[in-house]
Length: 95
Image (cartoon, rainbow, N blue to C red; front, side, top):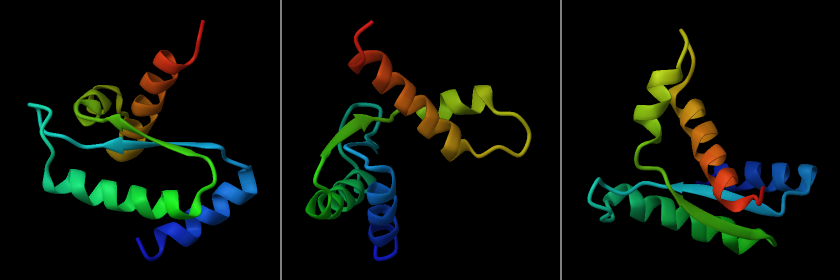
């Protein structure tokens, strides 16, 4: 996170970002894992320097779903992030 936070701060300022959605990994039974703790620690660092709001979003099935939509040489992580944000927007954005 020593490189992530300064780079993220530049992007936040450049694009005037007001809300961050951070994927929160949990296991299939909704319990926290070691990775959950790491993501929450990064979230605290982001919140310390970020004037907007930060929201955690369950990312449990995004990797499996992303693999269904992938074309050759695409990143599972990028596709997972797209799916996570799409789910968040569907729930949070009024129709």
